[in-house]
Length: 185
Ligand SMILES: Nc1nc2c(c(=O)[nH]1)N[C@H]1C(S)=C(S)[C@@H](COP(=O)(O)O)O[C@H]1N2
Ligand SMILES: [Mo]
Image (cartoon, rainbow, N blue to C red; front, top):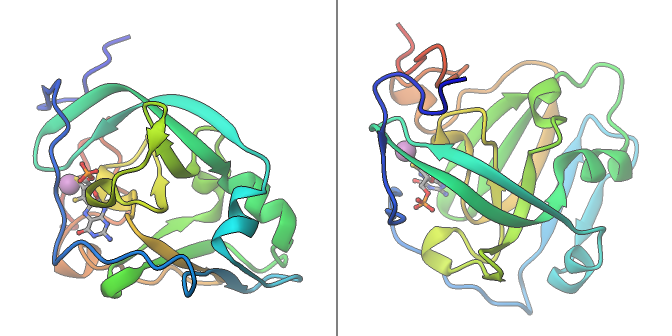
């Protein structure tokens, strides 16, 4: 199977791309909240998050602007393990991811339950650098990378899909690189 999605170019460096500035990380005030349509909402400190079961996953990364990067080694917590902890209610079908500074994105719960979807805090064996989303970012390898929100702080289970930051600005809500779903028209 062709590994590079249509009209993508392979990069070996790791470009940095985001809107706004890299947020400061303060371990004393940082928290990770999971709420909305769940039986057991949680608020975790940084140390509590690190104590969750850790997973390693190597995956490819595809930015909608046309670059892809292969074999990225992420370490963190599977989305599905977080879901197991909070127990989504039966009417939860989507999840909004909120990052520091107001960036948001949303995905169908079923897409997030895939085994390669992680909240990552390590990259290539080292703590994830702030410019790449440290202390914590979402990684959704099968979607264009604007779904892989950096600096995640809050996760909200919803019934309907909310439009994220780039999705409000004309980017595709489904964002499948293999179908080249770049724009929302
Ligand atoms: N919080 C936040 N996350 C974000 C973005 C952003 O602007 N803000 N940009 C997205 C886009 S478009 C891309 S391509 C990737 C880039 O990740 P990188 O800078 O680690 O390469 O982050 C995604 N996550
Ligand atoms: Mo991107």
